[in-house]
Image (tube, rainbow, N blue to C red; front, side):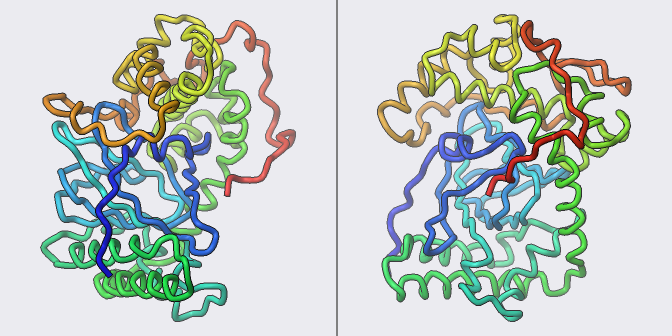
Length: 374
């Protein structure tokens, strides 16, 4: 079968709306076959924020060079390289200093490989994704010849999606197994353990009460000491633990989450810039504008005009013509710097709220937990 033309889409527009407060990206898979191939363009100063997903991902660098942050590690990738990202790993793409970056993403659930009746043999195809401890070599270099062959199989998989017949589903699953088998052989000498995966899940579970609280109270003043109490940790231990698990300081994470909420409000509501700033805990419009521009690369008004109109007129396509000659930078989250200082006493604040200053953070046992995002 001849592979279809590559349908490139703006990464921020496609991915950002499906990232929640926990930083979890939930992909809208087709129910009949939980796998998808996306052709993504990263351009401009706006970056997809730090996120994780419950699915597994194989990322191919089609054009450009980049740095990718996975947890607290920074890895360099070049055109033709491949990177594996397991479930639960916080990561983000750092945009290149100049030019366009094009990535092809194969995102899938284990069921796409095993079908409705998983067996031990099918699980072996997923071994490289379950061995991803802190020293795992995520990058497969183009010189090995593997990335190019995997990319061609990714195109074949995309040509079968969504599967309209049993034959199409069987074809897509076969192509996936062929690609994964190459990766299994490549990593066969790497010694690891699934304990790293389970330890990461336990760490995220410990932060879950905090993530749920942020989703409901991001517009209120939140102290570091309150966040630490939700996780049953001292202030100093909480700050170190949070950065180890997410790759960001708590205040940097909170700032970026609030700005992300503001982006959604700017394009999906008719609220004024000042109203949006107030809603995400910036009562001073000047401070909100400065923080927004630092994170997104444009003013709130420019963002509203650009993406608000784009949302009304249909899906956003590549912004290649706007990237030429522009210096592209990542957001400040990678450096761990927030807009306010973080102290071991936990007295620092991010933003402020005139209406929520009296809000109290409940003790961990008083949190009414909602189901985790699927």
